[in-house]
Image 1 (tube, rainbow, N blue to C red):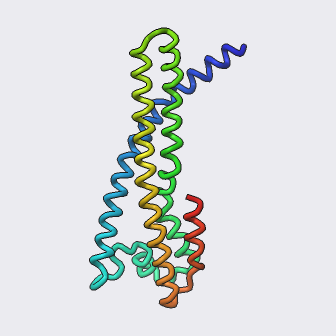
Image 2 (image 1 turned 30 degrees about the vertical axis):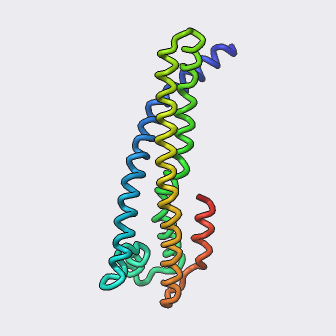
Image 3 (image 1 turned 90 degrees about the horizontal axis):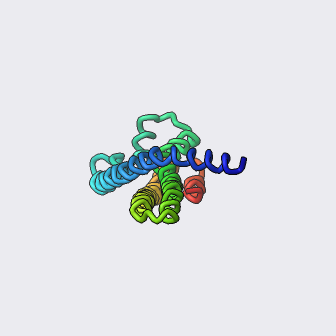
Length: 178
């Protein structure tokens, strides 16, 4: 009975390797897309200090388009702007670990069978997956960290302009969860 359960668990885990690798590849591409968007936003923020003060300031632009927005709505919008990159920051390393562990079973089996080709193939997949996922996590973490500060600054600016906003501490609290 125990052998059957172990065999089923092994087979079930192998099913998840390909989808995990696909999601890691998507997160890797997304991280570089996000980095490009971040660079463009940084450039717009530097250039937009004159004529268009909301360029590169996504929360300010949203607040301008929604003049009746409450302080809570601004806070929710700020969190929404960070939601997908924060998820990527947290999920990428988890998937990297999954993609490392799944091929380890076949690699160890290949080692016990004396099949070094199988060992090297599986270890190559495992290490490539974890490296790409950690790169994606590092990029998205850095972008989220800077964007969190930018959004907190925008909330403070809106508060000074008379728009009632939640305390800037909410964004700091959200950042500590990342």
